[in-house]
Length: 94
Image 1 (tube, rainbow, N blue to C red):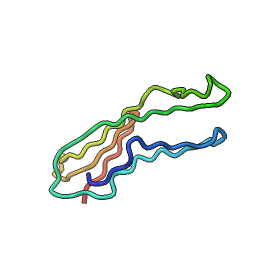
Image 2 (cartoon, one colour; image 1 turned 45 degrees about the vertical axis):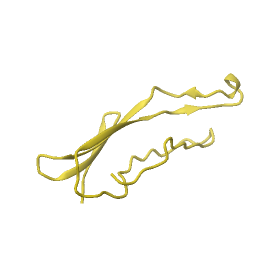
Image 3 (tube, rainbow, N blue to C red; image 1 turned 30 degrees about the horizontal axis):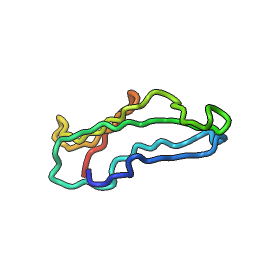
Image 4 (cartoon, rainbow, N blue to C red; image 1 turned 90 degrees about the vertical axis):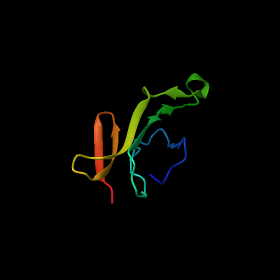
């Protein structure tokens, strides 16, 4: 996997925003030859409010583990896979 994003990536919005997208896109480029590899990342959701707990950070829910891997599947194609909260998406590499 060649591309990367800032770590940590911090997204914020106002309290009246009822929807905040959570995209788990694959990297925008790959470089052959491929090698099997993987890593885990932690997603943390938190909030603050000036009128609650002196505007201190409050954890919204437990941390979420996001697993990503590149592997050669049984069909011999190389694939990229991301898994989060029991959902998995796998794409074949070019």
